[in-house]
Image 1 (cartoon, rainbow, N blue to C red):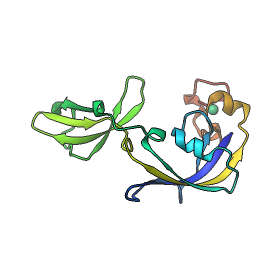
Image 2: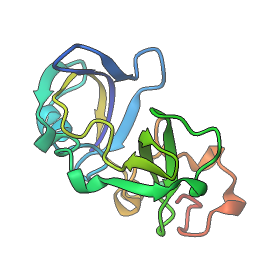
Image 3: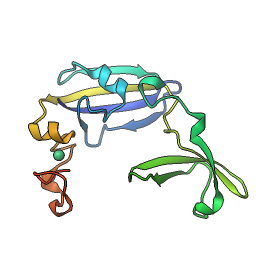
Image 4: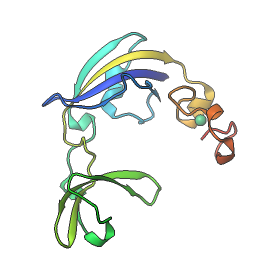
Length: 170
Ligand code: ZN
């Protein structure tokens, strides 16, 4: 299934909005491929076009608990000079994925950073509006992602850069 939704995410504890697709492009994803946090898919399972759902997710069904091991000290000379507490930097991992890390403390020699997801350990509330639910195409199922608006769109991308599948989609 390919599902398109509008969603608004707030922190359950204080109501602060951390993300919203309203006023932007809807979120479109291939259901059941772990592209979404687990609770999000569980809560909209069986939903139909036009449905609206509001639900709360504890950390274990969202971004996991805050892991103390994720807090590490790194020599200051590995960072840009204008680094400040509260900044969020992107670290490139060996697999090429970018992981956000937050600067929590700076002293003369070391910078303390937190690799935990910024929403780790938080209770989240989502308001979701189901805009569309459709069967996934064969190509989408084999690629593991949605095509077309809101997904990967081979028509709009530079095919010369693609190398991993027959329709030019990656
Ligand atoms: Zn594809």
